Length: 112
Image (cartoon, rainbow, N blue to C red; front, side, top):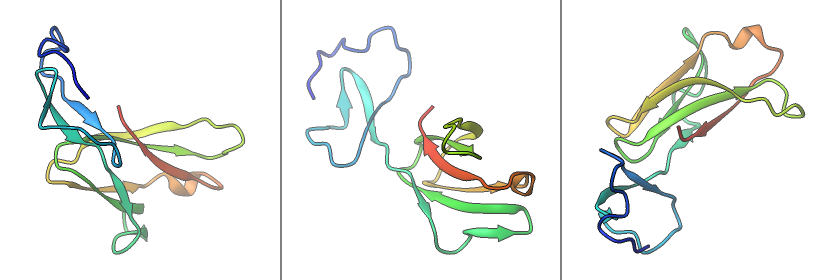
């Protein structure tokens, strides 16, 4: 992607996030830094029910923001944000102590 150096003037400390599989991204775009937005849920160690509720680990590029959302009925499609965080070191552990209050719960990661 190509933007003039002033492409993001007035946006303060904004960062431009790009998705995996896209090409042409450089360390900066329009005068702003860029970061690969690639969070994934690790279904290995830490995935499942533990002392703190149902949980899992999220991994991705350090310093990307993520929102963990839950839905109890996919047919209704109502997603509720549960937690907003930054992958400070490229990882984040998520636990949902309220998971037993729902007959089913599906989780997803989105951007803020």
